[in-house]
Length: 440
Image: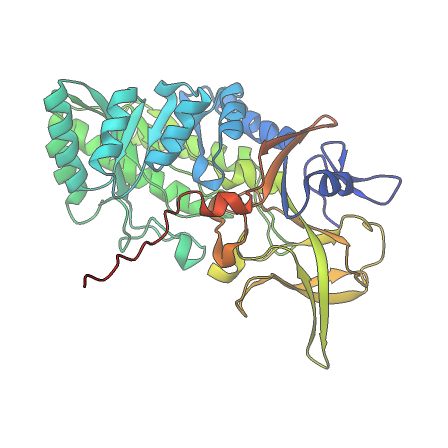
């Protein structure tokens, strides 16, 4: 049994998180329930930052909040001195409402609207990560009309394919994101922006994928971007001051996963950048990273109540829970795997194998194909680990299922930070249909 962060088993044989009994949380807040171990989030944030400080380089660690967005987690991120990566007007609005320092907000996205760009200028955020030529045109027009400066980074695709799932690989040449580094697009984007009076080009950005367990791809990306930056310095006497290498650091979902410690990823990045900078005669840039999953993923646990079971002789045993793909689409979307235990019977021998089925009307709504558990009964509380990233943030109302509540736990205390949706919430934006009477 692998436990994460502050998780433990108490004298009642119950799973505890942050010093709080998970069974009590399920009873008080209902299920499905997302429970976040805030101490683990803080620990990860501090580990990333400490590594940069030990290596004595300028840096920003930006929480990639698409993994889990919300006012409460933005407030914790601000407490830990993190910057923030947002990818939509909605995430930016939430960050502003949370009181997050605007100068530390980075705005991503491959199809930003004019309204979103206007919001970024209105709020005077830290920078915009530019993704394409259409966006360059919008930014130029907006900055010139307003006579307002904006820091920008150019997102480039370095032509590196990280070893991960095809759906979460982003650094290869055939990607919807960024300017290609190898076919001249990045050079053209540079020429269109570096001397602009209102657009302050401060650096380059890349993101090569997610759930990556090795450092070689990050090293290759660092070297390729440094070479390009050094070329621009030589040809145009222009020095990019920031190198943003994105995120994608892997976490342990199951025993098959073997992620590295945050410090290992970062140390290798820093040392590669230092070596490449020295070799190119280029000053070591400020290094930015964007961890999302590796900050929040294994800090999250989802609690479910088991309901029906079904035996298919000589095939499998099903145990159904009161959630499913409506609160965790990842298994259905790209075969993501999870581990679990019974939170109310955590010390009992796991002698059975169950397929954990959700309640959505889809045959593919299976959270775990082979869960090792004791003989389950209706009413048992199932804890599924490492659901902190891309669970709640990708949740839907499919089958008109309401989104779960979210609770933060820390040092024996628990706090509701997102309330459970009600049935009234499901229809609050609907106006109905009124059929006009036929004319005589």
